[in-house]
Image (cartoon, rainbow, N blue to C red; front, side, top):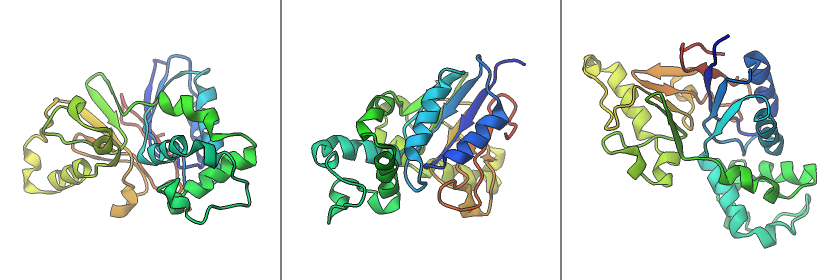
Length: 240
């Protein structure tokens, strides 16, 4: 089997979905798995998700990008490490938002996953620090949220790359409208773009979708109970 490049979007603490996908992929040494971020929050096993990806690096090539949930959780921890490390499983700060901005959007479950595993969040700071904001290979770009397609991606901030939804919305509109006969222009000239962050469920889909050159891979795992995690073979467009 020739080496494969496979893109995987938001996991959000659902380690069983990740394990199911890895079993379907059956990764080989020369395969490249590109994770688009949002490993944490919502599901109850964020610690285990990151541990699984770390171990996966012993099996095949792995690239990890950071998502907005990863950023908010680990930067929140970094800022308040001394206080957070004193928390107990059954104790909650009266104002947890001052530590984790997405506390009520899954950060509480992420904190619990570390507490129940009996480890400090610091154990995964190196993993987080080594995540990139975007990745380019073979003129295809992988990013969690999106970017301004009218200016070079390397000039754009993490805030844009992790949170943007405008790129996907523009691709949706372009694909649906009469202007789809014209090329969807991207300043950097990327052939394809792979995004997470925005669930395709918003438009009634349950599998990754391609709108012109833009792939939307987030299938709502961790947000919707019946959501299934998919990988996309970048070379063939096959869903796994």
